Image 1 (cartoon, rainbow, N blue to C red):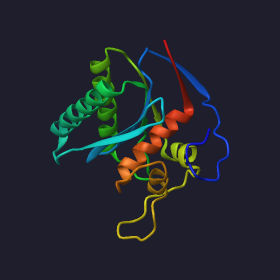
Image 2 (image 1 turned 90 degrees about the vertical axis):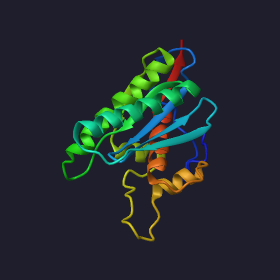
Image 3 (image 1 turned 60 degrees about the vertical axis):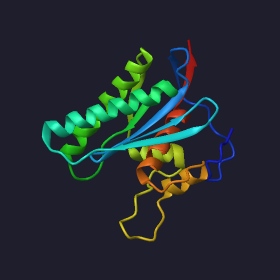
Image 4 (image 1 turned 90 degrees about the horizontal axis):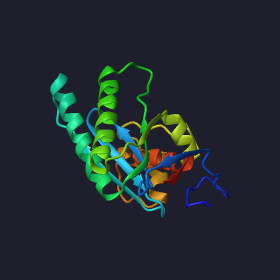
Length: 193
């Protein structure tokens, strides 16, 4: 069944992977991590979508990582109280230049979101990572949707896709998190037990 995903799609392929999840854990979560903020998108069993984000203040070193963990934990806990995840998928750090600060932040965000969801639901959940080109290909139909340079009039394809499935905002980060959640929904069938 196609859910307005565009790309001229006539039929949605069934998820290739099946996960056994705790009863009540019926949502797919997508995480777009960063050094300045985290965005977390959800899709429930009925296809309803949501997205939240938390900015991080500018700090350095261990203090920055501690705060990123705490804010990610809080976000994961708050969202899990409303909609328990069956799977959490987080975008991997990527790019041509090594970016240690981003790599550290991604690891801390993954740990925080996972730990917050676990604290709220008292259950573990599968957490996986995905490359940006992979989730963009699966969710949006094109793995080469690059963010335009600041000031460019060129639209961002992921934001265009997100608006097509109901997103009313303008945040590239929120749109990316929604794309990662869509990748999760299309990749993992959740079997509650």
